[in-house]
Length: 602
Image (cartoon, rainbow, N blue to C red):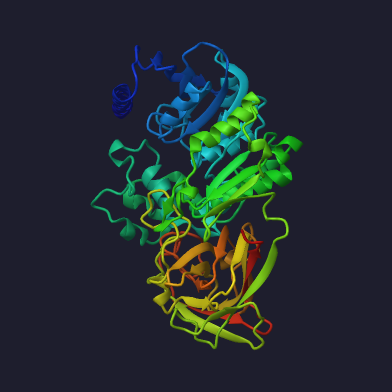
C-alpha cells in the first residue's frame, strides 16, 4: 500500500512538472515518455537506462530538433531532473547543437536502487557516460556538467576514466567528502550536514512543500533549537523520526579512514585522463574542493593533456556567481554568464572551435578590495612572498576593546592571552564559508558584533599606508594550550575598512585531536602547549591604504560547526559539555603568526 502511494505521488509530481513545462515553454506534441518538440529542440522524458547490476536509472534527454549525431553533455542529480534549475541551461545547450542527458541518481526520484550519498556515483557515472556516447544522437564525444553534489559526481565519474569522456566542468564541488564537505580541519559542519543530510536528503524523496525553501524545517520546529541538541548521534530523530543511516555513518567515521578514502576524488586524481575546469567562490562551502581540484589535477593528472588542461576560476561568490554577496557589492565585474562560460569550454574541446580560452592563463581570480579579475599562471602564484604577520599583546587581547595587535616584526618578549570557551554559549556563525538552506549567514558579513565578546581574541594591525595584496593559500601557526583533552581553534583573517566594517576574507578551524593529520586522532595532554598548523581558506584580497589587517581567534563557530564539548569523547557521543580555559602564546620562542601569500598588486 505504501509503495503504491509513493508510486502514485511520483507519477502525479511528474505530471505536474510536465504540465508546468508546457505552460512555461514552447509547444509540445506528445506525452512525457515520447519525444517532445519545443522550438528547435526535442525532449525525451523518462528514458530508462539499465546499469550493469540491473538497477534502472531514468533520465531526460535534450536534443536538437534535427536528427543527427551531436557532442553530448551528461549530468546526474539527486534533486530531481525536472526541478533542478538546470532545465533552462540544457534547453540552450540543445539549441546550440548539443545533446544533453540528465539523470536522477540511484535511489532518488524516478531512478531505482538505494540512496546512499556518494557511494554509487563513480560506477554509475562511468556507465551513464558510456551509455550516452553509444546512442544514435551522440557523436561519441562527451562532456560533463554541474555544480555542488552534481560537480562531485563529475569528479567521481572522471576518476573511472570513461573512454568517451573528453572534458569535465566540476563547479562549486568537493573533491574530498570528508575533508572539504563533511568537516573542515576535522570539525564537523553541523548546520550543513544536518540540514542537507537529514532534513533535505533523508532516506526518502523530499516532499514538494519543502522544495526551494531556505529552511527545510517544518514551522513547528526551530532549526537553532534542534542544532543545540546533544548528543549529535540521535539528532536525526528530532526531525526525521527514524534513523537516517548515512548521517549516523558520518558521525561514526569521525576521522579520514577507509570509509572516506574509498570515495575521495583526491585519492584518484592520477586516474583522470581529461582536462578539467573548476569554478568556485571565495565564500563557498566547497572552496577548498575547487582549489584542490585544480592543484591536484595540475600535479597528478593521469595524462599530459589532463595536467596541462587543468583550469580554475574563483569569484567573490557563495554557492554560485553573483554581483553582491553577504552585504558587499563587488560591482558588475564580479558577475559571470555561466552559459557562455560553459559554451566556450565545450565548443573548444568537443568541437575544436577557437573560443579564446586556449590563449588565457589557466587561473582566473577575482581580487576583492579592488574588484578586478586577473589571470595567473598557477596556484600558488609564482613569485608569491609568504610573509609572517605576528600576533602580539600585553595579555589583554580579549575583544576589539583589548590590546591585541599584528606586526610584521617578531615580538621579542613572550606573552599570552586567555579566554574561557563555554560550549553552552558558543560564538555564533556570522558570515564565512557556508551555504544551502542552513540557518547561518554566508559571505563577508561584518564581524564587529562578534568582536565585542570576551571569548574572542582580536589582533589588529596599524592603518596601512600602502596596499598589501594577497592571493593564495593562508595558514596560521598557533602556539596554544587548553586545560582539557580536546578543543577547537577557530581563526579568521579580516579586512578592516576605514569606517570599521570588519570583512572576513579567509577562515579556518582545527579540531585539536587532528593536529597530526586528519587520519590520526590523538587527544591532548591538559595544559601542555602545542604548535598547531591551521589551514585557512584560500583568498585573493587587496588590503588598501587606510585599512587594517585583523586576526580573530576563538574556539567556536556555531552552528556552522558543531560545538566541541571539550570532553575528548568520540564525535556525536557526548551529551555533556565542560568549559575550557584556553591560552594563546606569542613572542619569544612561541611566535604565533599567520602566513600571508603576498603578491604583486594590480
